[in-house]
Length: 183
Image 1 (spheres, rainbow, N blue to C red):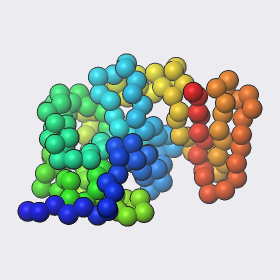
Image 2: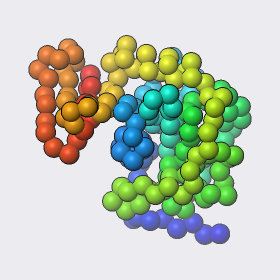
Image 3: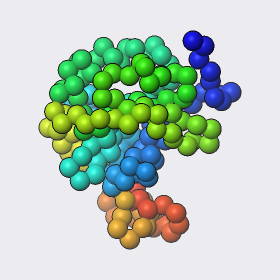
Image 4: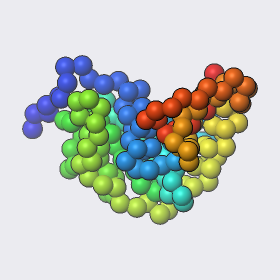
């Protein structure tokens, strides 16, 4: 079956991760989300992960079928209990991954023109997820001051300077997240 691309310029891995992070905070209602945390404290390096209450949502971004096939060979895919995420999704442009390609219980998100996300298949629960790794990841991100997106109750967007609060910027508008940015 021929695979059809939806745009002339394929999205980069980073763009897919940022779209996933926005999706987690938007339609998934995750008060906390992280794109490409890259904390060396855990074996699994999620592309995006969001947290809401006691549940976590993992999103893996794929720009090619080869990358998707390689991902299926990782230990936390072979042994789901070693992986992060109560819910787990792949995100890609249409034509990269189909519903028939998915491992059991995984969901699929397609990114449409304009960056909109369409749920092709919902994830089923992974109750045996590695929650200790998730806590380690969050702790490491806070320790190294990794940018976290956090929704505020007041619906404000706040950007902190590296010194936690010194010269904090607050902006009004559509954004309802707090961005803890530390470079």
